[in-house]
Amino acid sequence: SPSDPDLVERARAAKARLGDKVFVLGHHYQRDEVIQFADVTGDSFKLARDAAARPEAEYIVFCGVHFMAESADILTSDDQKVVLPDLAAGCSMADMATAEQVAECWDVLTEAGIAEQVVPVSYMNSSADIKAFTGKHGGTICTSSNAKRALDWAFEQGEKVLFLPDQHLGRNTAVRDMGMSLDDCVVYNPHKPNGGLTAEELRAAKMILWRGHCSVHGRFSLDSVNDVRARIPDVNVLVHPECKHEVVAAADYVGSTEYIIKALEAAPAGSKWAIGTELNLVRRLANRFAPEGKEIVFLDKTVCFCSTMNRIDLPHLVWALESLADGNLVNRIEVDKETEAFAKLALERMLALP
Ligand code: 13P
Ligand code: SF4
Image (tube, rainbow, N blue to C red; front, side):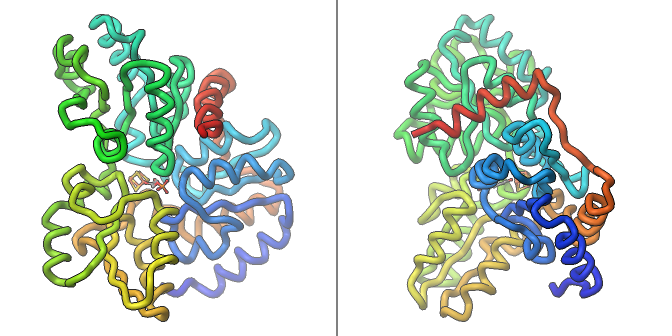
């Protein structure tokens, strides 16, 4: 949708006043009105790396969600300030694993006599507390673009993986990319005593999946895939690995937001694609590639935007940039030192993955 010209001008002016002091990062799920002001766009992995590669910027304005801004704070130097234009831009998946719940889970694994064999692997979409837990217990962070490499690494360190908090990414990577079976995976439910699992089940499992999911990607169904195939012959179905296993199993291609963009860039003219990921990105790609004769549709019209990603809109961005330009540091995201040290360990293990 077209952005308000007055706000566009104000954002441009505030950014110009700040010059090199500000660096704006934009996740691919951001609105068009926001993404036009991003100095770089990317998936979670690329943005974490790009944030760390800008030591000269005093302010990193993160157009994305809370856990991404926290990760940027952890990876940047102490005098760099990370700003999230709307503090209510959280992530429902990240909220599904709290520090207390994960500590309790570790007690359950210890009780079952397996904690020593377990390596935690936490998806980027988790709070800094969970990343710190992961670092403390010898584990690594992963994103949807390096989950297989993270699991390969983890299984070199131990016999079992506790995968937090997205059960779908964990299961899809284990089964689709690592050749494990569904029976190698169990689901730990933090709302049930002992995670709803017996000690025997925990001992037999290779992958202990936390019972979390993305409220957006979780809504694509096998029916969405079957319907689009019936409607559009020769359609290529391309989905994000946060989708349910049955959806991923029925898709032609699976990958992170950055992978999705690359796949469409490489697609031949005349090809048809149904994309199962967030709507802002799918719409942008449909518009971008239509002139090249690539037909791109949203996998399921009943699925909506990520409501928290959408909280970062042009008014919030303008407010943040103008405040910074006026010398007012607003909406700073700052992880405490102790949490940061352990979370950084886990993030650096990810950045060092082969
Ligand atoms: P990627 O951009 O890393 O694929 O992640 C998608 C996502 O859900 C971020 O919240
Ligand atoms: Fe979280 Fe899903 Fe939104 Fe990504 S798309 S930020 S995982 S709720």
